[in-house]
Length: 100
Image (cartoon, rainbow, N blue to C red):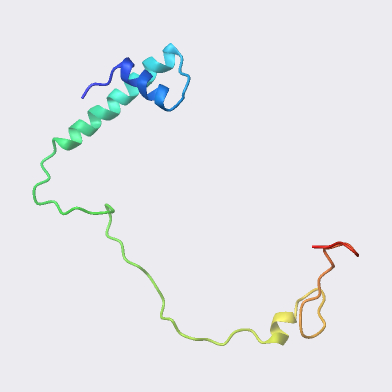
């Protein structure tokens, strides 16, 4: 299937693209090359070739879902810049009297 400059101008109009004559000429050649390549692919003999979603064999590498102990409160607060022994202390981020 050959693409013409008229086709490119029509698609540009539908896409609301303002193309110069030079851009139309360039895109006509580039889209023609793409369509030519697709035409070559369609002529390949793919009889017996299984359809795939990816060209390489893919496997999921997952680890076992095993419960492991997490940090204790003391360990989590160990390197905190400020804490009250139960939680992180952070500077106020809202001004006094401001409503959120």
